Length: 399
Ligand code: PLP
Image (tube, rainbow, N blue to C red):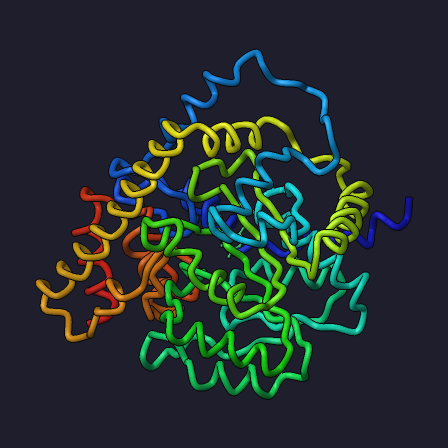
């Protein structure tokens, strides 16, 4: 019984603790810009119509027993087509090991475990900055992590030169985690040309590209365009790892639906890799859940529901884009002396505002506006109703 004394309180998750503080605040003006979950223009969570229709379609036809350890076979196949392209050779030739995973987080964890098992001396290079949980995931899998240059606070854009230097200077055969689109937390992505250069340099160095795609469709509103980086690497002949999450683009946050795929030399190798991924998952959680995966595969396999999804995805992207434009315009109209072009240059769910930790504290204490200390604004939390209040508050703390 003594060992319980050694159990202290775990460090708080920076994002979850913001949500707690937000709920405890009784101000009618409060705004939560912390959590990276889509909200409509009323600030309400959204269940997509395609998801509701898929729910209706699968009612009563669901097996409550997991039929196979690889999860929903259709989900895996359709996910691979989303990432690699409808007519991709990788998919046609079965040159990938794909498994359903516990959304993006679970897929990263599964891969990290696989990496440690089969490349025990390796490390993972993470972009600086990155989604904070990446650090936790590889740490818990006992894979050491390093960071590579990514964001340039000066330009509020990509630090491309420094990134390329880090790629060149890393030992050959290093593992690099890349965000293929809508980088979290910065909203800054390489251009197509830059991706081509990165891919080329990865070839020279024999690095392993590991893509964490949590926002396909959320960057541009176009699913293929958002997968462009992945397709460039595959065209260049890289064997990559790829995480896909349906949390954001289908609004299935709580259902935990995702996919991990690892490209292989041939179908035979893919069978071996897949069996190892399943073997790891077996001891951790046995099988992934059935319901959410069935929703996703139903939407992806039904042309009507799939079109509806694509339209709804565009609505979400258009709303966040409109809020970017409005926020920047409001700040300019208030006569802000600062340049806010990055609000509209950055894309996806987040804006890396450049606000300092002190300014973030002032926004919270004086204006009841909540965001992470790095100044990351979740665009989804901004609405037609609160954007003017937000712009004014930002102007007050930065002028
Ligand atoms: N990867 C990135 C870059 C993310 O931003 C997130 C969520 O914020 C995830 C993975 C994991 O999301 P989920 O586990 O809900 O799919």
